[in-house]
Image 1: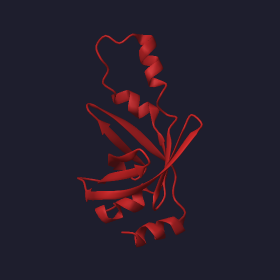
Image 2: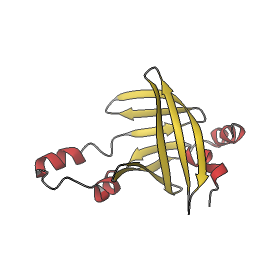
Image 3: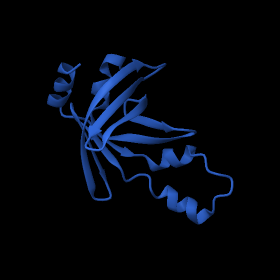
Image 4: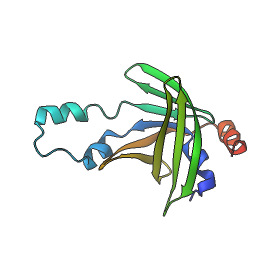
Length: 135
């Protein structure tokens, strides 16, 4: 089981939005039309995010963005670690709180709901070694 100090290594790799898990736990307004709900649910499952030792590279609907990131803090949770990362680009800084629920899954909480991500690829061994040096 990873410790907090291993959180950076755990984050490395490529992740994809997990539509099935996200939609299963989403809390919808009471009076949401079926057509609108289906449209909303179609948003999930397309975003991929790759974390390297220094960059967050996201791809969504043909658009790619690359931002430098840093881990502001990490801690061991009851089972898996949590991270708070800060990304930086020309628009400024943005913080994201990441909760791992397995070595191959994490979620980002947003109010009562969360978006889940599943691991697509693990990082190359050279990238894991590089991340370990940056701790």
